[in-house]
Length: 140
Length: 140
DNA sequence: GACGTAATGTTATACAATAACATTATTGCG
DNA sequence: CGCAATAATGTTATTGTATAACATTACGTC
Image (cartoon, rainbow over all chains, first blue to last red; front, side, top):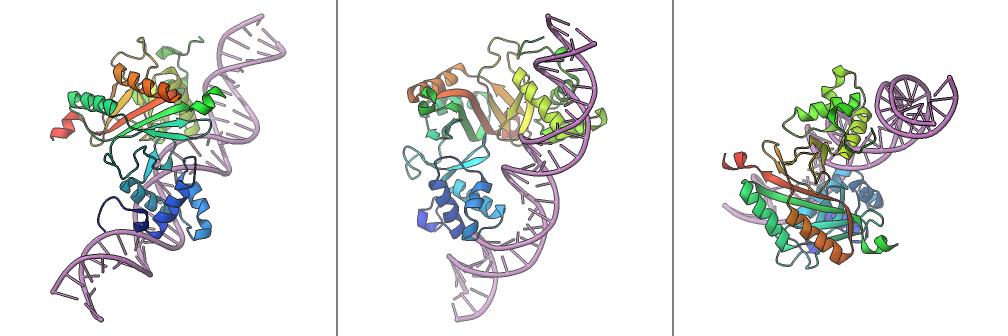
């Protein structure tokens, strides 16, 4: 299969292991903490995890959070298979409970594009990360 | 002086050294490359640079670029002393020439705030970084 | 001048990511 | 099938980024 998005069963062993760990986690995980959870499955070196992560990010199944040096399984409202699979996504990261909400607002993506166009800047990728408190932790 | 924004001459020695290096650089710099440029001034350990950077970021004189693990001197269109000193800022990072453009779009920020409010999310900080090609590098 | 606070210096360590190289699947095709 | 091309894997070592812990020095304030 050559498609650049793959169903779960097309993942290689290491990719599936890494993705499994991320899917099972509420919070974002660093490459090294993923590795720690996969020692008993035979993974030994960071590179094995990083390589899997790179592919998973390519496939759109996993996102990298730049401000945390960590990774989360994709949780699009629409799901990764939906139309705007690789569109710009924003993250709201709770600094208390580590929950990450993922959202995409076409209007402000449009605004960013507008600015970029006006400046002659041609974006390859766009990173939007809000750090703060989620609803639950806000009231508490 | 207790104000949380300081004029240049209020910086401590290390802060002034680090800020000087950043001001003199076109491209963003990592803490370690700043350190390399300050060895002859007596700085020896990363921590000396990181501590200065932390203050400079607090003062609003320097920004951290999360997607690069690097730092730039603030270059607000309005300047750091202007009204919206600590407002949300976005960066357009050229991946070819390393130039960084800094901009603030109030409407855009308003949209983000709107989303956050609707979700009950309370943002402390907002990271917006565009990666791509600047005008000059785009045509070339 | 004594106290509290901020800045500094230094060593060691933790955490994140990649380089380089050897080996083993998998796939496609004559 | 057999072979070549490509992708994935395994392993060791290294580079890069950031902080912990602790001792010391400067500074403002009363």
